[in-house]
Image (tube, rainbow, N blue to C red):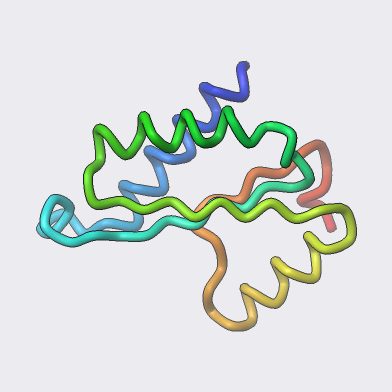
Length: 97
């Protein structure tokens, strides 16, 4: 499956879960998207986010890309603080940790 297809599905799912049914169009919302060490794909993400925002006005997307050992500590800190990212894109078996 292509990364683009997975990205689109993840964003659509996050939007559905993050936005209440009654206020989807009226309230600006912010989604956070956490990835692990794929900063070289920045243009792909910018393009995908722009396409997504055209069909979902009022949704702001914050892309968080963490490198190597930063990822686990960052994610765990966010979970403990109650501010976990809306979407987490993991590679391989990183989720096991």
